[in-house]
Length: 200
Image 1: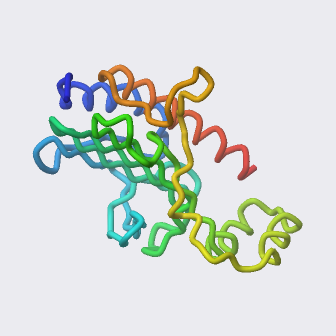
Image 2: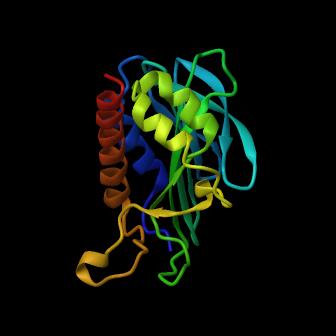
């Protein structure tokens, strides 16, 4: 059950997270009832892999050749948050989607997939495009020569914030707006720090 005002939360996210974007303006705007998507003054197109299909989305310039897409939906019975990071040129529709993180709260601690969680886009296309940026020929060659696997790792849900260390479950429910705000701020700060680190 939703216990906070989504528009107030989004306004606070817009205010506090603008500092993570120095090459563009950052804003989440309302596109339908309690659904918000990223917007700003330096947008481009990309194909967002959401597991079962691809959707063409507008992505915001983050830094260097990194782009980000954010979607948040707040309903009484569920909350869905999705953040995808892409790498590529402005004019490239087929930007390389590096990973996607999601937090789906259906008010059910017995759901199968951990919440929040990561999806990593580990395929030959990702490795080939990422190779030039990270300049780790030895590592990339090892991955390329490791052979094919009979499944898509992109379908796997990697737990981001499970409560295992305190004997809890793999589902973290969204308690209030401060939890979402702190998570989103920490997520952007962490991702930017790590992406800058690997692209030096």
